[in-house]
Image (tube, rainbow, N blue to C red; front, top):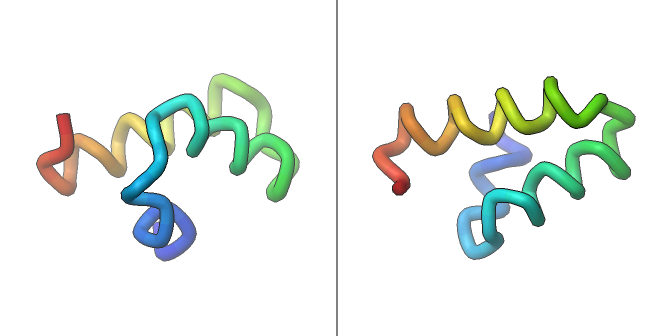
Length: 44
């Protein structure tokens, strides 16, 4: 989740795209990680 901590200035789908391209995650997994990270950190 440290990767996502560094992306707080980016929109949800920009974070998803970064995980997909930079870390070879599928869309569903990247989206779930971003959504979970935002929920845990109180981001709307």
